[in-house]
Image (cartoon, rainbow, N blue to C red; front, side, top):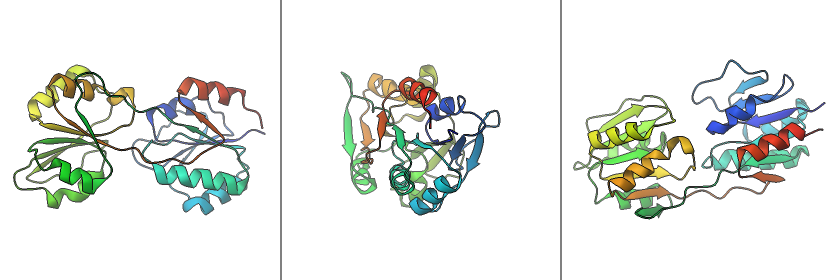
Length: 241
């Protein structure tokens, strides 16, 4: 019997989960909302590294592992590829292409937090769209800066940082209003390639703001790689154990 384990993380993964059946499993790390209207089983939480995931694949008789985690969830992607090899299960991955700069864009790629901190020094009002990562650095905000962070869920900020809890998709007019209200002088982003969060790049372009783009991590090779959701959905529909 066919049994698929889908590792979620990107917005598109929920669309894939909606075509899964009762024997299949949709797996989430536990961040964000857990869907309750699916025909498949839903598993929330980790596995204990590649060894634990491999044991789960074997114990649950999984016939296909699908990695649809976020492009920056490199550890999970490496764990998935390693676990699939260990368990002798094929591993497919949805690898969403990144955004490409357009005319008028002023993008600067940074390799990690240390490089980002240096690149931020000339700015006073950065807008972070990196998820929760900046929360660990709230005590180190320079006195001349005021940060705005946007995360999936609200978190406490401090006197020099406002945290916005919001979920995409974000509309262009909403983003224009937010940028105007915040008076940002730089956008800090991951290159997720998501349509749901792309409007912020258009607003940065319109306002002639620089963008500090966190470089994508290196992801492991898998048995099949898909760049479009539709192609992966078709392959899943045709998959037989």
